[in-house]
Length: 229
Ligand code: C5P
Image 1: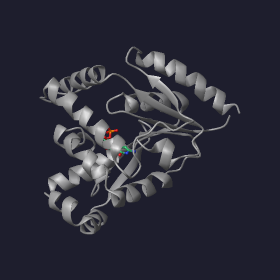
Image 2: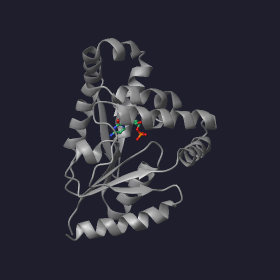
Image 3: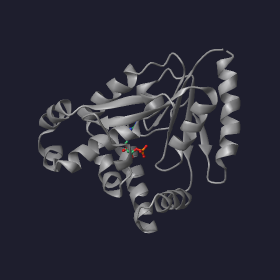
Image 4: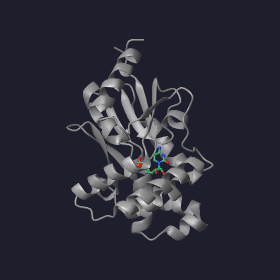
């Protein structure tokens, strides 16, 4: 059976990563959350107070990033790539609202996108991969056999995200979460380099009224049909 590349793009907080993780597990594929790379760079900038370089000297910022490597390491138990900064696992730092508030600004910088897309393309796809993000079907893997674009109403997405954060012990307001995801959608869709778009060969899924199991069932059928080609 053919192992394929699955690109999942879509609006903020549409459950792309949770879905990608479950699909990867079901099909014994690897899962890469590309958003965590943009979040890791953002975390690095905020931690080291480098926002001035974002505005004034991107080359200097890239140099600093090259001296503080961000890497993915594969966890054999979970089948998931986790993100490390200077050899330290920073996976748990990435969903902070401060990171969410700044990440789309960082992700709009072409030089940073170039570096991260290079790392994404170097990942071995031969055993099947599910990668989620904003430009996976359009830029990173335009040859992906299956491209999905996830969306849902902003209120549904904010409610889900808010509950997730509260359950994880993060102290946030619902209205801040809603505002953040609307702001990111606008920035991500209007930036010049690699904007969030629905490519013409993508399948659009509005999951406002779908459970994760509904989505997995539907997507599994699509995967099986592509694997058998
Ligand atoms: O997927 P997640 O919501 O964690 O992504 C955080 C941000 O990273 C997005 O809002 C977007 O600005 C950026 N991103 C991107 N390209 C990707 C993945 C994420 O620009 N492939």
